Image (cartoon, rainbow, N blue to C red; front, side, top):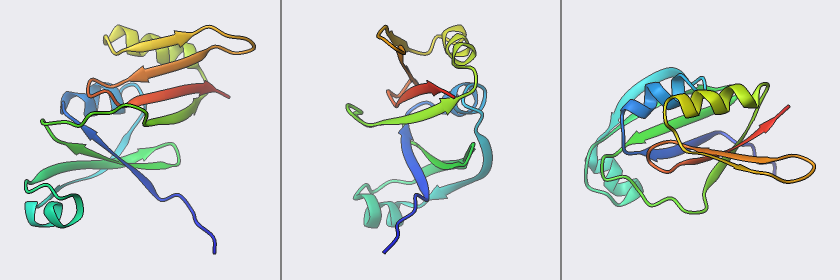
Length: 126
């Protein structure tokens, strides 16, 4: 049996993150916006409310962003992205006041950035 990755779903509490973080910084190409109606949300996620979803591509990764002002508590979850110019991505995040953590270590520093909902992205460079 073979298994392939299909998509990633993340909860975000701030709709401004769609443009400012996911599109402007991570390069999300929005392909679709829709509402997951509360009846279906209840069946799948056990939450009885409508939720807007913005879906698109970041590189080869299909991503669904669930806009939920109640948010979720994110602790260990993170997505690792590989970019061509990590320094430029760090500067874009800092310019828009997104959280950036740089952990100095040899041979390569570790870098993490977060959206305003606490979704964490480890950033590596090609």
